[in-house]
Image (cartoon, rainbow, N blue to C red; front, side):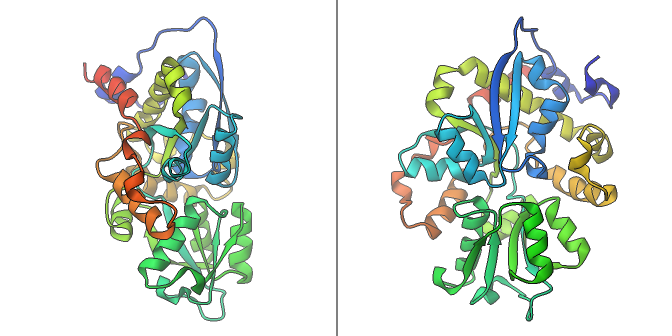
Length: 339
């Protein structure tokens, strides 16, 4: 019996997605995430844990790197077939002549919060206080990097008014905030909730919800997604379709199950010692996940606008947004589910 059968039955639409054809031999694929334990990437972990990839005849190996920019690098190098990271990388790569596209969108919020260290001599109260401060990010070129710069710019600060500090892992974030070596940090869940609960941080800008993202960035958004090189998708439409079908099933599972039921599927080290804290962070994040895997209307334009504002090398008129994502596979999956 498939693992998901232990839990509440899916809604009628989700049930239609559960239909699959057995495959004689599993095809090996490798995906890489920008931090597997981050809640924003939860759908790929669930698709693996619930056997959805296996049901599609895929043997998927999931690797993890601290920063999404490293994931993008591995994808372009051909080391992995798919990257589970933020959509903004597809636009950035295209501006540099590298063709990749998101084939399924996972989250409709940025899923991030800019937190100020309460251990700093004079804690920041807003992004306007970033002048002369040290801002922590996962890495140079990461989504946390560009969004930190964009928020500072919107607060009226030039790029040379503050220092960006690449920190890499979640543990480094916690240590830097605790000892006051950085003044603020851009971080995902569950790390954001851990820092806030520890009293080492306070919220400056909250983009963990759809509403908070719209308020901070000015429009609809897309963050975590599964993207691949366009030439790979063109050459492997069936594998792409099966990957998307598994991911949309995973999104349906999130939409029709409680935080406790989802946590029961996850590896123990994902949840950590403080189950109640993780449950709270997960429950708050769940409404931000996509229901259908499609790119939200207007989201590419919002992401491009923010990227171009902080990176003069990205000229909007030279970017073909229609080539940075496709709804083709998600539409096919949802069409089947509707019948």
